[in-house]
Image 1: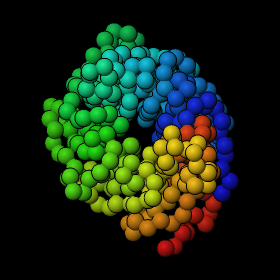
Image 2: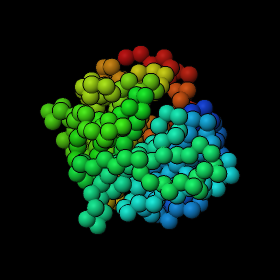
Image 3: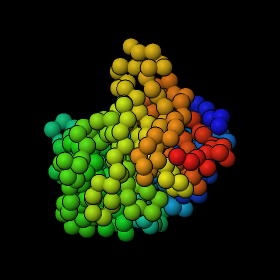
Amino acid sequence: MRPILMKGHERPLTFLKYNRDGDLLFSCAKDHNPTVWFADNGERLGTYRGHNGAVWSCDISRDSSTLITGSADQTAKLWDVKTGTPLFTFNFDSPARSVDFAVGDQIAVITTDPFMGLTSAIHIKHIARDPDDRMAETGESVLILKGPQGRINRAVWGPLNRTIISAGEDTVIRIWDSETGKLLKESDKEDGHKKPITSLSKSADGSHFLTGSLDKSAKLWDTRSLKLIKTYVTERPVNAVTMSPLLDHVVLGGGQDASAVTTTDHRAGKFEAKFYDKILTEEIGGVKGHFGPINALAFNPDGRSFASGGEDGYVRLHHFDPDYFNIKL
């Protein structure tokens, strides 16, 4: 399995996302320019220029027409995927961290960081269907949820857009009612992570989700009941998690903190994407290659390839060999 190396970013990667068809890969980095690539050969299609700070995350509408990005410049932007034109800008009073379209792409959830005395918040925004309508919009939040301490690193929609699942620095996973803003569930202190949660990734059917944490573990949760299903233990902080839509595989990426990287041998950094059996929680293999911690992971919706983005500024695209599909434990 030879990876395709995609060099398009000047700074560390922060997020990767495939579109629903799996033919495009979107990457975000700290260099202000989200980029879109062909997912089969790694060719760069274009960049989305307009942000003035690190871009922390992105999401793509179901029909691949609209891209949403959240940035440290205190805005979230909607883009026309084909032309690269910015369609609308949501302005905030603090950096925008996580963005996620709801099913139907008519609403989005955006989280903002704590900043200058402001607490972190989860904003629900209305997205206009008609491009002409965008200008008429004020971009006001339909609902603002507050409560979590520290940064909210990820917030995503639950089943049928009825709930929002959030996780972040205060180690608690919360499920909110997206209509009323009421807090419905919190993860159990005993079962939960012991250090900040860095990443959250839903299964293809949305029935369960995976969280990765600096406590050197990843955990699999039931979306409706918030019960802990499995725990995957590694020997380094986890920055990124994803799971295969095809096989029962979980992938974790990480490495030591960026500040400690230069002081260690690159072999000691353990910068590999580790594959675990989802059910048995045993490690099945690893994919090495990055010269720095892995900050982003994404599985192609067809389950036949995956991408990783590192602190080294590279996106590595891996198409699996046939034998990957018959791994026996």
